[in-house]
Amino acid sequence: MSNYDVVVIGSGPGGYVGAIRCAQLGLKTALIEKYSTLGGTCLNVGCIPSKALLDSSEHFHNATHNFKEHGIEIKDIKANLEQMINRKNDVVSQTCSGIKFLMDKNKIDVYQGVGSLIDSTTVSVKGENEATLKAKYIVLASGSKPNYFPGMEPDKDRIITSTEALNMKEIPGKMLVIGGGVIGLELGSVYGRLGTQIEVVEFAPNIIPTMDGTMSKELTKVLKKEGFKFHFEHRVQKVENTGKGVKLTALNKKGEEVVLEADYCLVAVGRKPYTEGLGLENAGVKVNERGQIEVNDHLQTNIPNIYAIGDVVRGAMLAHKAEEEGVFVAELLAGQKPHINYNLIPGVVYTWPEVASVGKTEEELKAAGVAIKVGSFPIKALGRARASMDIMGTVKVIADSETDEVLGVHMIAPRAADLIMEAVTAMEYRASAEDIARICHPHPTYSEAVKEAALAATADRALHV
Image (tube, rainbow, N blue to C red; front, side):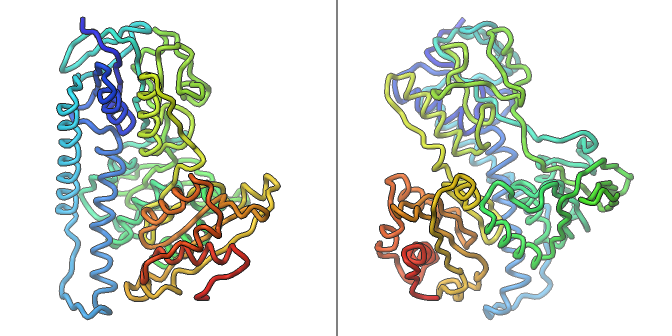
């Protein structure tokens, strides 16, 4: 039996980052991963591979739609999906190998196998490395898996999840996407750019329903322009594999039956905590009705020496949120006083243009009765956007009407995933819209839209509209 200060179960962004921070702080650390590669969902079948395919499909889209306008003429352009998948796999392999290097560098013992609690201080590993580990502290970071509802059970053939969508053997003629959230829209964009007709079936009245309403409206316009079709307020009843395709039956908001057919159906209705096989009952760890491991504000379970982070606990299922929680727990165990501001964890949708958000939405603030002022600036008014032909989108800054403190920033813009960090930094230091407006932004850049939106929120002072 091996003894450790900390045993981490799960090597996704939360688990491996938490393990690294534990090791940096002098804690003897072990990491358990049931799959053959490290990195969890994010690196293997989530964030990284999807972005690789999004970039490849974006290049193809630009070659077929925008190159001629730029004076670049190419004949006989075609999409080689097999090569796109191969490149994606190379990116994944390199990234996962990098995690293995970091484990070795930080002298973290890695066990390949299924980690399961025997009791509150003992973990068994079954698989490639059979072992029994004794730990002062245990961190549960087992992540999540694709969710689905009755009637839409994936068969991984024609009715697929995000995992299968990352390894398609053909470019579908038509694909139905159940769910207008991040996963469905990103993977829909990959194949939509390659020529697939995408139809989104969404229960809510709009896409990305958890984000600011303005972002939903703007992204809907963008995707419709790209050929997406939307069926809002439709409740899926069942999806059937017909052999050469799929048939989806839904009820619209009037209760009328609607039947849609396509080559494939992507089920993208979110993800659910993955806790099977963890042996939580052996240690008495509590789970709530949503399948999440219950934790307090210190990410501590009801068993004092067991902690849980990432997708298995409450909150947004985001890789960077899991990373922050991994570091938080490591520093807490080392006797430090770490801090996470959950309100300032940004969210991103990697369509093009990208959508990014931090803080409260306009709808949330109005519902809470907060007096606000809103400033917006259209991307098409930027010289940089016209130069690159990326003119769709807007930046929105929301500030307190009395104190001018920035309460939320929402944007659909080129490189919004990177631009949002200006807002996160400013809001971490409780900046006002005036503060952002008075910072000198380089010209010509997309970041000028943030300055202009802040100016618009500050007594309607935008300069270029």
